[in-house]
Image 1 (tube, one colour):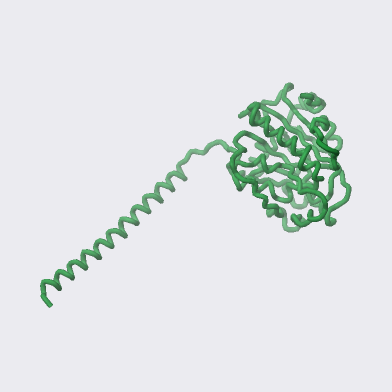
Image 2: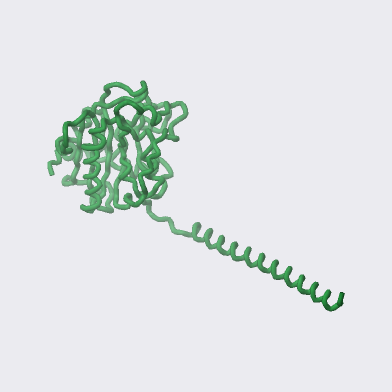
Length: 302
């Protein structure tokens, strides 16, 4: 074979090997540069105020956001306090009652940024954050009962992200409600509340719960006689310190029954004080006593 041909082939092979090595080196540099930029972006971003999509890191943060009106039952995070156990996630805070298999109350805040395009997740499931020795309520505990798995903090109040919406489907946020209550009159008040935020440029502090017992599902979940909710409207972007004597406060107390035909939620307006007397809760405990007296004894007739 011609010596020149052999030498040419060797040189060509060396060139190819060098080109491959150069491509690999350039690729690594490009990847490293992109990584460095990403890490720099993540570590040098200034800390911004919490929005409803930012994870809550501890109970103290939740108390400032969802429990600004107060902790209605002085719930604690001690598992020994099984019937008044404080739980917090990105969607709401609640007091869980292990004996009832449901919440004593659920508290959250609604702002315009809580609404988005996230679909309803429908992933009903036991709450993974319950202590291990607590009873696990499952979707099957409601099966065949004739009662809906009624949200206290509604799915539609948390449509900004799939993750936050999904948290509204924990069974700790559910209570047995008749289909007439859950799908009609209770739902109508939920829709009214969201419309206030969307159309009236207000934010809402909300707390909801149930009381009474008319039996249990699978000997695990108490069926309440009544479900109640309180909404406090403040100017959009303000915090709870904006509450004053003229602040709109709406309280409703609805029997957990079958309803004949279309029923207007306004028929069930009551006072915060009346709900407190039936539940032994203190719903606006972070307000000065004189302001509590004014707001808690007033019926919203608008």
